[in-house]
Length: 364
Image (cartoon, rainbow, N blue to C red; front, side, top):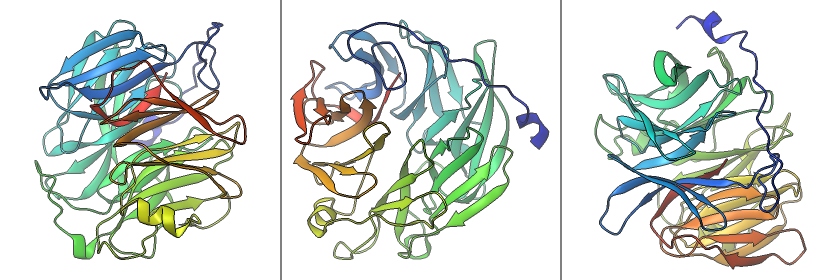
């Protein structure tokens, strides 16, 4: 793809409602929780629920999905296939209609994450080049006539790219290169002794701006959250010895290097070398992290790194910010709301189906 293809796209205005009740941060309508979910028989669904418990849709899909990417101003969302899926699903979020099954091209598979550009015309997805396994690429797809069409790809400037997000300027991508090489249709790690994990910033036309690494070679940078001031936080999955003191949470503040976020030893040990979803609440300046293998949810003050909450939550999965604080899903228990507006964080269960929620949720 020619670089000029990406340039000069204007940002469309976001549609805004004026409804009361639950509110998504920065929006005016009651939020729709979007996530992948299984049923008791192992069948896969793309689902949407209002936080009052009412179901908007539950659409059967062929392959298990990972993250969800809401369109910035249309009632659409892409449910992204979980590595090494070759399918993702474009869903009408009003009624759950499956609008398109998006197939990855030959010798590519999805890594579970994508982002729409703020203008809504372009989508970027992390992918694996299976002809040269582990070579990270970012597939570029154009939304035309209600369908996504692949237009080209960029280099992720690393191996095994996982999550990518926009920086606040809306034109710079931050990419978590997990550093793990896998074959075409496998989740088996092929290079744990020679991992090349990194945090990369690049322009929307693919130009590398920075590439930083954590000190532990076997520490896979996987998931991200970005604050409105440009602070980037990453959660890691450590592939080395269970007793190693790995950097499981890291931060890159504006103008500073990528470095460890100060964790208490009890919290690091409780994560059992594995983190999942992250979310930042910009108004409350809070950071939330799920650690499903340790069955723990953590919340910190983003600026001071003060621990605000360390609480058990079975197989905690996705986390997203709402006006009150954070919504957290669970693979084994109830979804919960954590109200963070007072010094003492309170939680209550939501009237949503219990269990079987996948790793991520998005509020649209």
